[in-house]
Amino acid sequence: MAEATKTNPETNDPDVPKTRKAFVPLENNPEVMTSLVHKLGLSPALSFHDVYSITDPDMLAFVPRPAAALLLVFPISASYETSRMDEDKDKPDYEGKGAGEPVVWYKQTIRNACGLIGILHALSNGLATEFIEPDSDLHKLVKDAIPLAPAQRADLLYNSQALESAHQSAATQGDSAAPGAEDNIDLHYVCFVKDAKSNLWELDGRRKGPLNRGQLGLDEDVLSEKALELGVKKFFGEGGGCWWWGVEIQCHCSGSKPGLIFGAYNEDMMGRLGDCIGWTWISRSALE
Image 1: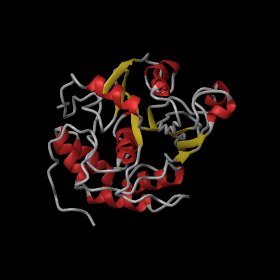
Image 2: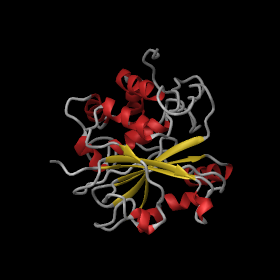
Image 3: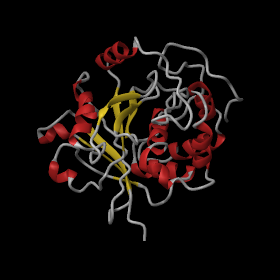
């Protein structure tokens, strides 16, 4: 049952207070994510599928391009937290809103909802916006969010019955037993998108706002070598250990199989990066 409407508390802690509403964490699973985004109102032209590498050129050749958004999931480590706090300490809280924003950013104020926030970042920016069904819950949510300041935008998500219902339905699916809504989960999602001016943005609901990671070429997408160097590859050095990745990529390409793609495996067994890595992304089929 959803809580009554509340206003988010002032806090310097990036983690959501335990007094706040909590969601059952989403399983990083293609069917689960597909169910969620379709229930919210994303076109059936996009769905989740598996992929196995962002480093092997032969495997990358199977990925539909261009890729418009990338969703990364990883365990929060002490070294990552040190790096995050050092980067954020002198930054003001983000106050952007309205149609002039380069990207739509959401502050996370629901516990264990970082997967949902990451998905919303991917769906609210880039090519995926072209596949939001008119008059759907997702269409209304994004439309209502754009003119709001970050605190009010977070309240909109917090109090959305449609969002909570879709998330709850998806969280009950999956191949493994779901953790409890109140459990402490150390995995976290971050989204990368390319804006209309070719800037690469890191979107994370735990940060003070969106982070501009650098300029891409007009023909470079978020899965290009430059984007990977500016974005996700930096996470490989954050504390080592077991890294699970989720890559959510909107791809606009003729003849491709539609998909939001997900995969996970022990890449270290193949002599490459990390100990356990996975990916998720969105791709688009040619419209008949």
